[in-house]
Length: 196
Ligand code: HEC
Ligand code: HEC
Image (cartoon, rainbow, N blue to C red; front, side, top):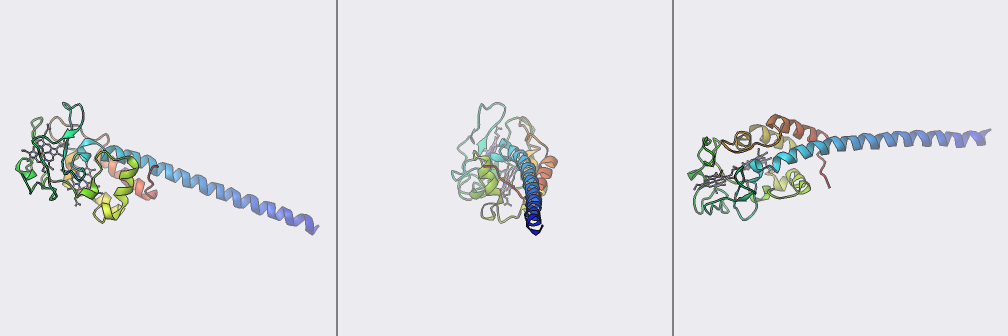
């Protein structure tokens, strides 16, 4: 009798431990899926010209994009932000980008704060979704911010606000600022997964 019971016991244990393991895996992959979907929406905003045109690399040249441009192109008038990222070496951004927005198409926009490029480590213009995702989580490349700090930046920064109020003739990102913040919160809650 003993000999029969023992294997049965093992089979039962084996079955239950594997069933719950399978459940773990399926709830984990569901979590990752929700997180990755949220990231896709965030990426659609970050990679949009209104957000990417300032987040450029070490050539320090902001980008232009708009309805009358076939594709993104470097800022006209030989503008270069220099290592200062604010144009201090040649002509300051604020010479043309004042703190009020422009209602005339192709006028220089403004945002109620000093117009300048972010540090070069924050560059995401032309980068892949995976690259931006890993970068934005990396405190060495995001201004020493936690994920919560990033959400806070999205909520309160005036240059972020400008992206959704860019003045005449410029399209806004594909989803609203409120939706973007919600997706950021979902992405964070799901462990901030990045696509491959
Ligand atoms: C006029 C240029 C400009 C525009 C346009 C702009 N940014 Fe930025 N962004 C900056 C600057 C400058 C910083 C650095 C500010 C700081 O670290 O406090 C920054 C920092 C950030 C950061 C935090 C650091 C990081 O890179 O991880 C996020 C997130 C961000 N921007 C998102 C956006 C989004 C979203 C938009 C579009 C809705 C946008 N930005 C549009 C200039 C800009
Ligand atoms: C001589 C005037 C002038 C100076 C100086 C200048 N800009 Fe501009 N900028 C403009 C004009 C005009 C536009 C609008 C172009 C258009 O929409 O066709 C513009 C547009 C932009 C845009 C595009 C916004 C968008 O997404 O549509 C960015 C980004 C930008 N400037 C960044 C900068 C930065 C950073 C500096 C300083 C390094 C700077 N600019 C200096 C005149 C200037």
